[in-house]
Length: 64
Image (tube, rainbow, N blue to C red; front, top):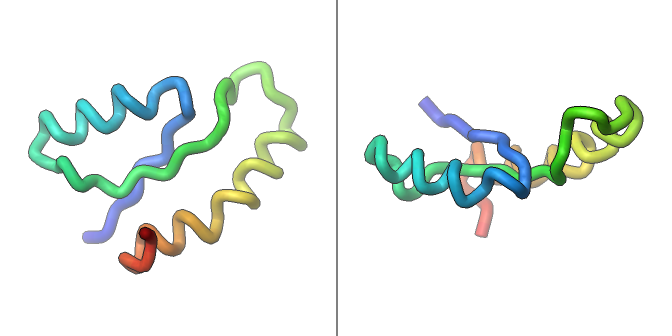
């Protein structure tokens, strides 16, 4: 089942490390700015909108 993990810049390294430790060294990971908490809804929506193409590429295997 195709899966994409979404994480923030602050936790990108940890996300990669944990994925690898669970046997997924090539996990599909999309990264959004940090922090999410305390960030306005408008900004989070902008970040999400900007991430859509990257997430779709990760799901379809067309990401570089």
